[in-house]
Length: 483
Image 1: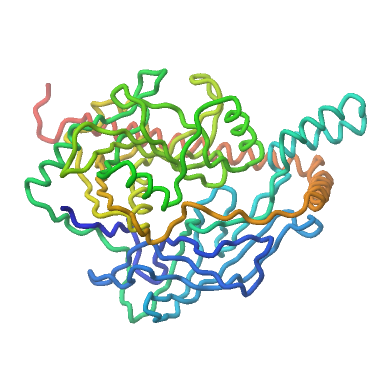
Image 2: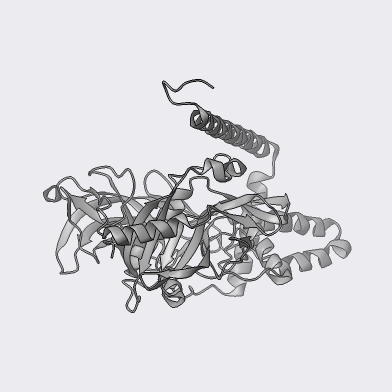
């Protein structure tokens, strides 16, 4: 069939400072982590030098927790922080090499990583739930009879967010690694040539040609998500592969699910089985809906999968549209909270490929060109979308023994209720005295105005780029006769 692709990161730079993607193998929490604690992460990016692989499958980065600051009772710190130091590269056969690695990013929406690789947690008092609860709490002091019932109801419905940092096994990490000089010029492995007979390739091309370009909303007639993935295998193989990669399912829409979504938004919390809008492919609803939460409701990776008629090489065929949610907005059509989608849809397509390859549940991958341009098939409805127009066709294996299985993560132990109550009171009081004044509010308003203007400028540039691309696409080639 087709040769298995190594799937690297596009645009990787040679060492020193080579971008590397890894999966955390050691669960970490600022509740329990101590300086000097050992940490390991599995290298997920195949690395090559002079056309040959230099890191065997199963290579791990090893290091320690360098610094950790927990919030505790909130007497010293308002937010948690964590710094990791990876210094060794360990091969499966036991060989070890000294490396210098810096954490660049974590695929998580709650925490941020600064330029020095230090991870900063959220400030719980900045969430919508705490801002609302704080106002009610101070109102209770002036009007206890009227406000106490409202305060009790608010406290029962919305919880004070946990400000500590918690990373489960499988957390995606992006690092820059300086490899040993003896490795040579290391970079992500390029995609090898696909090995297939002309008949096999023609059959695959015909299958891709038959795919619709777009999914459609159940309520609206305009195109929504781009079909950019093809899976070959049984339903069990599809579900086992994604479960091993840490993807979960989706709840049906309901009143309870709506309340859980609101709570996740105002508490800046996760909702790993959040409902997904029903999209149709040729009038049919998807058989499978999957997502990977980035620890908040606002940002997640998600896809829908439709069973296709017929088979290819004796395997069932499944079409999919993968997108990444980048934020939440309140809309009218449909009414309620909805997500903004990342315009660079190829990034999400390739993320799915890399996730599945890392599990070892993939037999082969081939990138297949679409037969004609997207612009004639609805791109105007998704202005600003960026894609090379290819479909990633992934052939799955039995996935009997995944390389790593992140299907289940053991929950971290939580502090006692009394500790959580004292922490909330302490952090709320600190926030009130530090920020509820004219000087801080003025500075914060100036900061928000600056960020809004910068975002407006970025959007204006993106729209201008999209208009220029559209004009170039409709411009006749040089030397062509004018109409």
